[in-house]
Length: 234
Image (tube, rainbow, N blue to C red):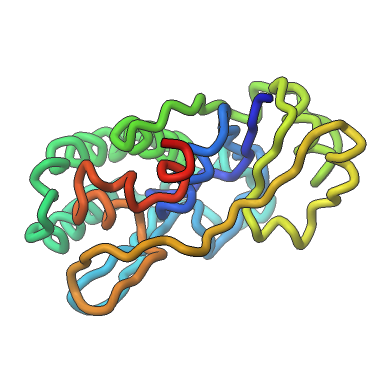
């Protein structure tokens, strides 16, 4: 049984996103879809002394109502230095920040030169997967000849990738037509984000839905032990 998941790319996403990646054999980045504003594609949250803070990559959106995620361009390349400076100051006292400092400093230096949002997201996803020890194959949906819309399109990608099992995010329950997967002989399952253990954090009460950076800087090599997929598939 080959397991597939298909999601749009996110910028430095939370641990649940990486749990989906680690739960399948192939993770398809669905960036031929329409870019959505005020979403996770170009931003995420970190904890700071002053509360949650959005880190957003500035992109061109004016007049581009139907642009795809993989067509979305960065509008100000100084974002990378600003983000890294904020992360560095925020997590300087985190127990494992020094362990990952050089890696992320290099990533942000590379990202600063990149024009396309999708490429930036892919760069961070790949590096963080390697750091966590996630071996899942990452591919782009444009590598497959997808047909149809919505659920039909997802089914066609899973079939083209040779999959027989599809793992979806829970929010997709609102629009996925389960019967189309059943008719195609593909087992459909939904990720469960409940039951994550807490870990020590800086700056007050525990917040579980922040960027994976928080987990890495606070727990180091123990980060996988706070993720569901590693506990379920040791």
